[in-house]
Image (cartoon, rainbow, N blue to C red; front, side, top):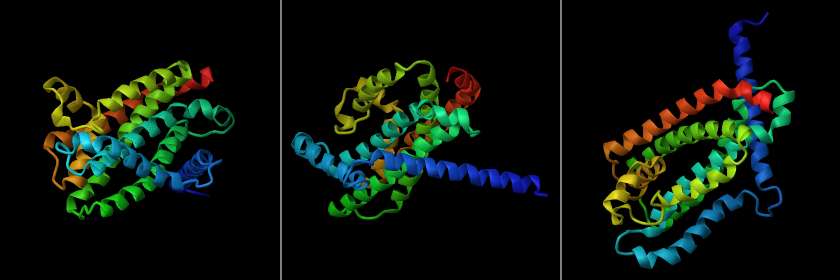
Length: 262
């Protein structure tokens, strides 16, 4: 007879197996009809950086040193966040059949979408590291903070993803509303322009933007190779922890209503 501890460990292994399979399915589905497949995760940021560099390098050459890396750092952070939250939003509705037929924790599908975005981000980072070598950015101990930054960004994205997945079940229009919010959010994240060049009011707005906190920490750690200001580190951890706690709490509170709606 198995002990309770052994039974729990077996359930945990099965749970992670299911998540791994779902992540694999999401990655394969994303590149199902693509000849280059997952290589687009590496090529896309490189080509985007090249285009944006040609457009904006002349404009910001005096105010932004090493603009291609400045832009690419902000862009990959933004793409991870927007990709993870957009994918998580439709996780429950897209997996309605599995939810009704298979006894799985409902957050499994949200987590799988988020981890698929994280996996894709890992491939993007291959291109990022390559560009760091090309632009002669030397390794530094501060770069270790980039991993910590991504961890808290993951928590922040999961929290938002939990909230959106619940909202989408009851209000399908949230998908279109969120796309508009993301557009505004992106322009308020100082991805391709210098934060310091904006007005004092805009600096306050951008400074209170959670995504900008993660972008700022990443740039400090990798591009400028310095330790970020304490306020940014507090924001980095605080936004991640609070977002995850609130999102998970709301999700658990409403998950039974989701089943009734589906």
